[in-house]
Length: 492
Image (tube, rainbow, N blue to C red):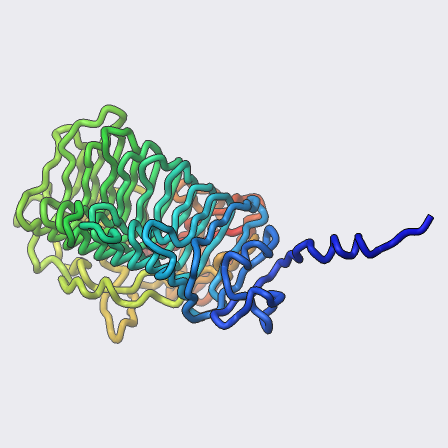
């Protein structure tokens, strides 16, 4: 029997090659093989070629995107797909020519990690996420025709870390829909935002309208929203009488056209700890209804200078140690190091974390120092300070470089993100008892790495997270001089 290989070779020729590493560049070509010396041109092509657990490296420069990028294949908990800016380069995906009503990126699947990408000028959302367990880090979404980043259609367990969303405005409309971040409508459960900023969007900074699940925002800043007939709230925690459980910690909302923090008919539980609301148009905190599905709880918060309406809190709100409950003289300008809001626009640090500022930080003479109640967030001194910033975290700014006082220095873990091991290092200028622990985002201890007397000097300890799931974790050091807490990201 005669065997011919020609048909088999033809079949193999038409099977696309798949790669664990794919490179793309603005001057690339989709006919290339996707190597660093022969990069692709479009993200859609790169997505089609990369394998689960593989990485798409996006070189710096501007990409003139001609179509929505639709991502529909899922990774796994141990094999994330990754789209990463190459080294320290800044790639910009410009969707100007895609047309009105079309999104930039549609992430309709699970286990993707995007980092360092700018998405702009889409006719609708810059990005929509409808899948689960996705991580978006150090991305910028701006000048899109609807919300910069929307999580809807069941999107769940999303972590948005150190991202900026700004200057989004409805295309050809009056500005009533474009928010910075929108986990809303038919969104799923357990979406989180950490260290994000949202400003100058035509509607809200964060919009949770119709959200029926759990959402959290930690160390997020929002300002200047609602400038063109939009609602103009900083953090809108719900809407349409739905029951949504929302937690905000160490967040700041200022100079929005409407409310800083708004209930908006959310009938679930809203927890607000150590937040600062300043100079918002129609109230800093507006929670005037009794929830049917829980309890609204406010502790350690600051409200200062609403523009034309006082705060409105229902009698059912559980309150403790907020600025408006303090006895004695009212809050004044003299309580703060600085009221220059332009500091919020300072560049982020190299690791993507928020810039060090003195805006809305308390002076050491303020009556709001050590005036709070322990809610598990970590603090220095005898008790937590009020508001989003602990006084001893920042004492002065010189050319945007921070001097940190005290006798403890806790360094960022390295590497970060990590899988599965990382190193935590710290310095002590005084000997004494030291405790280093790992907790989840709820403050529940998962493991203890150090619990002993140590001499002064440099120390380090390894942490192996082989038995932990991907996610954001907290690591802390505690001595008799105080507590310092930092975040780290496990990515498997």
